[in-house]
Length: 411
Ligand SMILES: Cc1ncc(COP(=O)(O)O)c(C=O)c1O
Image 1 (tube, rainbow, N blue to C red):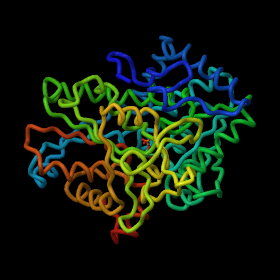
Image 2: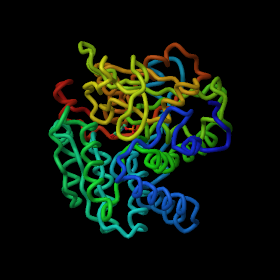
Image 3: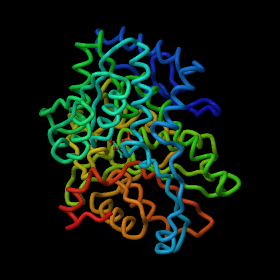
């Protein structure tokens, strides 16, 4: 499939919701066909509605505080001695990460569907935190499904969810992480879709959830494009946009305005979770061996065993610890528009340490994977190359993990 210019990539699917005829789709139980149809109609109606967009843009600007900063990391640039490194500080968003863009759209749709309850999944806790925050603002009841392993390792975000009045539903099945939380959340929705709206926390799931999420996070690259043009007077000739990839909502949002550029001018680099260096387990379906499989209603590259079962994953970063990935990223990989690699747990920790020591920013362990790649490639490039890293989450949620591994939590 050739990507069409001028059309958002999320909309370049066939009538069955497949990208390139093989990624995505709607692998759902019969009972979900109608709720998904209804949600699709609702979204298609409102995505172009002037009042809806005005309200959404106002919330983006005045509630979550966008545009977030675009800053030069001069100390890191000088230290590495190569490409110029910048960061898009998406972690400045209210709540500390990009997940608020999607949460706002879902809460607005939930209201228009006249539903009083919203449910979602979470891994790192940021998506749950944002849904709980927005639910409180909109007066909605909120349930957040979260693996018990993640509840243990992401305590600050759990505290925030509870403070916002959300119920955290602990998920004790499987690996007790994001993958199980999404499954449980979808199961709950199947049984309660008449009164509950579901928002999936990433660019994954049945086609409509990919579209709503991508429609929402695309705002990040609209902001970034303006900021880059202000800084350089044009889009630089050698620009590299580096983003971590779990399900892929942040990366799509960071890249969407730049996909139509020639790949020699604007390189898109996604960084997955390579897991601990002494383990065979990882969460890197695009950059390590994997096959197409079906998970959470969509076909995509999945980490599988030789029988085609979804394999366990491992990563220090809860937000990246997911065995599949968005159909959009499968497409970008297949057509060669984006390049995907991985960073190990150790590389991410090292990157966190270096960036935090040198700069006044403190990326969470998810964007630390993206910084690890920037640190790897910057010294090999000259200063006509501009690297922009999406610093999409704040490290405060990871303070216990960082303390355990590095001895102290610096900030
Ligand atoms: C800060 C942060 N970055 C990245 C991710 C990965 O998700 P996605 O790939 O959908 O952006 C998460 C997920 O929870 C996150 O919290």
